[in-house]
Length: 114
Image 1: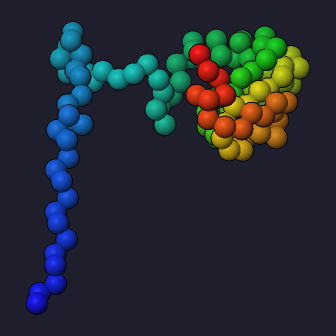
Image 2: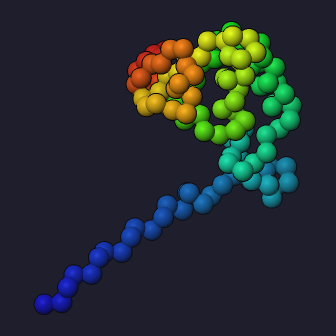
């Protein structure tokens, strides 16, 4: 008997490769309004975030590992500059857990219902 060959992998769903293009120029790729790893932050957004952190009395961290700069520094800045309380909602400990005043362990969908 010959050994059984593994079955071939199923083809990738074509929809994964159909990204929406800009309706104006037809060449640019549309993506969500977020920042991907390695992309620079918009300076206006960053400055607004820094102002918000400076003025915050409470910072709610939900579902983040707290590993990515500059966002991970914002709760620490709020605590240092304004004495803000940090509340962390996450199933696991994170890089910011030791700075949190309140730690809620579990999925945010369960801990923060509508």
